Amino acid sequence: MHLFFRLTHRMPGHWVMVLVMALLLAASGARSHEIRPAIVDLTFAGDGTVRLDMSLILEAALAEIGVEHSDSDDSPNARRYNDLRGLDEAALAAEFERFTARFLEGVRLVAAEETIALEIVEIGIEPVGDTNFARLSRITLSGALPRGATAVTYSFDPAFGPSVIRVPDGQGAYSYSVYLDDGSPSAAIPVAGGSALSAGQVFVDYIGVGFTHIVPKGLDHILFVVGLFLLSPRLKPLVIQITAFTVAHSVTLALAMLGVISLPASIVEPLIALSIVYIAIENLATNRLSPWRPFVVFGFGLLHGLGFAGVLTEFGLSPAHFVSGLIGFNVGVEAGQLAVVAACYALLGAWFSDRSWYRARVTTPMSLAIGGMALWWVVERTGLMA
Image (cartoon, rainbow, N blue to C red):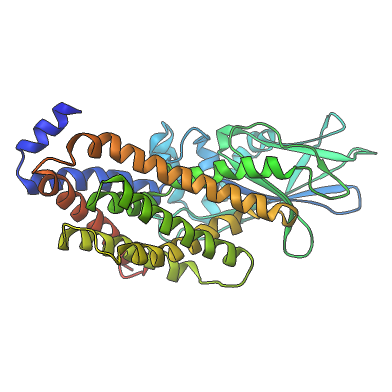
């Protein structure tokens, strides 16, 4: 650590900026190659059959990226994954047909200690489109329940990545929803319906979902928090800003999940990127924390809350445990943000924030790098590069 800062201290300011920008550019690849969980809806038809409707990044399953990788580039199978992403629908369907037996081994439903034989009844693959973004495929599987089965357990091979298992209630909500990230089976899911999870279990599960949405998957949220840190690494003003941000995103997250407010991701995501640009510009324009900055951060927190709502909407919160799931997710997000702040303080604030060169060597180049990355996201998310 000291060696790194002795080296950067001797560098001209623009070379420090270049170094930081290179590191951020490398990190930004996680957004383009981020592995999302398979979303699986389980329904009981009432005629003795069970159905799984899956939405997943099929290429990641075929390449067996695995739950240990949040970014496909970290996997030794990254080249295979990237080759698959370039295939058209027919070619990818042919690859999946050859992989079908292996895939069916990895999707397991067990009832009355008997593994249910599943078959693929439908598959839908999107056109290639922009390969900078993962495409989703849809697979429907069906099988016969054993006679007298009262509950089933679901598991997904960790070699295919994480998954979320949900049970639709027929009214647009979910009576059961849980995130599985290690290949372990779900709790027993009653055939007759009803949640099989306690409020405490949902709370704990969604803490993990919220934390991983920040670290390591939420690079835009991470850069926003780092931007807050850079202008004033002192603890008190930083706590005030983080608190304002947390309160704000908690409010809009709750309102969005209740259906009170709604904005499409095509609007929310560019605005989130613009909020990071603003923070970076303010860091460059002033060397002191303005009295209105917490209010500005509060306003941006409202935007980020709408972004968080997209994650929970996709996962599906059980109405029976809506409050515990929502609170758990917020606790996880807050823990992720505090982990980012703690890392910044341990790497920078505790050692160098009182040095005369801190602003010139740290705040300015890092704010330029963060602002440049966020501006690129604005262009990317608004389709200006199309």
